[in-house]
Every structure is written in structure tokens, then in C-alpha cells.
Image (cartoon, rainbow, N blue to C red; front, side, top):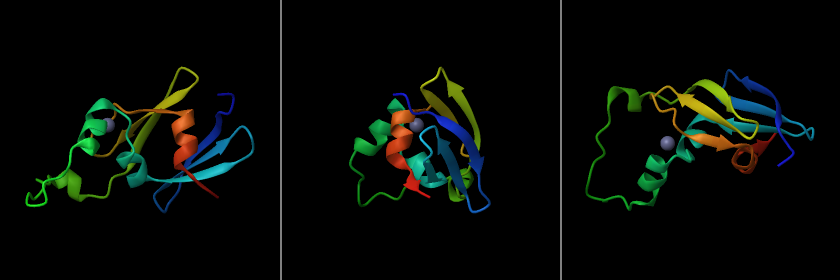
Amino acid sequence: MDIYPTALKLTDDRHLLIDWSDGQRRRYGFKALRDACPCATCREKRSTPQDPLALPMLGAAQLQPVAIVGMKPVGNYAYTIAFSDGHDTGIYSFELLRELGTPG
Ligand SMILES: [Zn+2]
């Protein structure tokens, strides 16, 4: 993958903006990014069918809209994203990030 982010920015309307080396700009909703977390725990959670009769146990943190609190580069191919719910183990490859964002 020879396309890489050249600038990261958090907007006031709760989006992440990434400028890419090929000149494209993509927007990412915080929640969409959190929901797409590629770590093993989240992948397993997503692949487990939800019991329609069960109410999820929501802690106070989960009732708050999730936000990005930090991003750290991993090598030259990915970022770890730390979220306000305390989750920071997802490694978002540039390839994944390119798939997720919306142009603009
Ligand atoms: Zn995760």
C-alpha cells in the first residue's frame, strides 16, 4: 500500500478527517470507526448473533457518544485509535481506513 495519510484532523462535528497522499480527503464518523474496530474482541462480538430478548448492559461510558481521544501510528501501515470508552486495541490499517471513509 503506497497511499498513506498526510494529515489527521478532528472536526467539531465529531468526525475524523484524513488527507491522503493521493490528494483525497475522507471523513470518518467516530461511531462508525468504533463499530469497525478490527481487533479480535470486537470482531468476535460482531460475529456473535445478538439475542433479541436480551437487553445489553450499558454502563455510563457506553451511554455517552463515543469520541476519539488519540491516534498513534503503527509502523508505516496503520494507526491504533483510542476511544473515549477506553478501547484502544484496534489496529486500523491504512487499507481499512481507505475503505471506511466517505469522500469529502
Ligand atoms: Zn476492538
